[in-house]
Image (tube, rainbow, N blue to C red; front, side, top):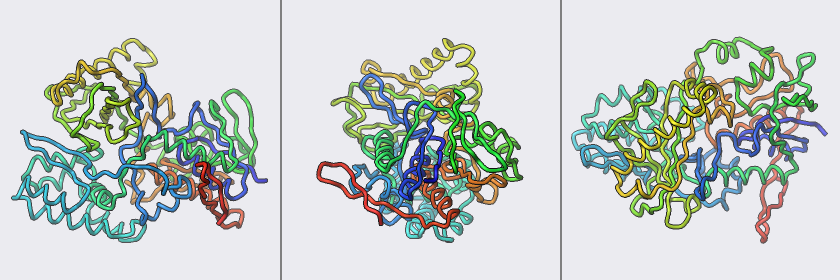
Length: 491
């Protein structure tokens, strides 16, 4: 049986392993940590469940081109999830603007806030409706991309309402993001493609692990790959950092791209494209995040929306960055996130200057912990000022920094979204490397960013490998038994 080693048990690696197992390959996944998921991570603190990944999960409507892949891996029909009817709210001078999932409601909300911007609002909503109606794998997606590649910051100059401008640049967007990104997000919400799986990242990863292992795959945890072994320009296996070697006919890396290219492969296979992406310093990930989680002994009854954006009374200063607005996620839409009668709040703060956090933890752990506590206390004060009755009800505080993401994912420069590969003409890196046989890459480092596209990336690599062996990719689908276990049927 042909042997395939997969590096990394994130969603792309687990998907690649599952589809290869369906096609009679023997696979083993080597994961550097003691649990699967990679950036699709969650953790427990003092009885609270913290989701560190899923803000919204797209491509999950029945008509989306990627939906079949998700269903083949996760049995989507039986996966409980919450559909966002209202995505977020922003406030300014006592006025609240709500980002509704339904475009008709959203248009009315925008016009109520700023009737004088009606013409521009109608233009935006009309374009979002068009995007909602097209196949996102068609050439028409490119038409809209180029038509709306204008930055949000530039387009916002047309608007009179500062509140609508504020909404446009809220997470995950910035003034530099394209208007296409915003319109695509609005279209996805309208199509009910943006949701949250109950149980969050952990539930999703557990299902992926179950799928892979039931298909016969093996995961080796606490197994950090130090080197990809090659001979005569073909991969032969891997060596772990403990010195153990494992042989294989093929290797798929679903791990960090920088570590794969420059460390595991020792920089031996560098063509013009690889040099541009990994050696020119042009694409170094510059953004990471601080992620604050609070366990609150209180229910937020009237807040279903995932995100509430607030303007800070006292701006938060992180290194050289001044942060005036933060988004607070109120996790009351997922009853598994907190004990009965309690709520988890999370605050994601995008930042630059990631290296200082990484170095501080290495050189002065006590000062590193002090800075984390200082930021958490600042945010508790601000949230108390906004919602009231918070400070005395905080039962759990957890703070993740760029140093945390380095430790748990080894991502280049602690990046949480790889980098902007698409800036070079919209071309993504190839899943194969020039000059190296029987080797593939999948996941966000080949431009397949996000949960759904990460899983699709794993399937795409399995298909490429099968094609190399003159085989058609076969799918084994779920069939659910009464005892809630899963059997498989080849189709």
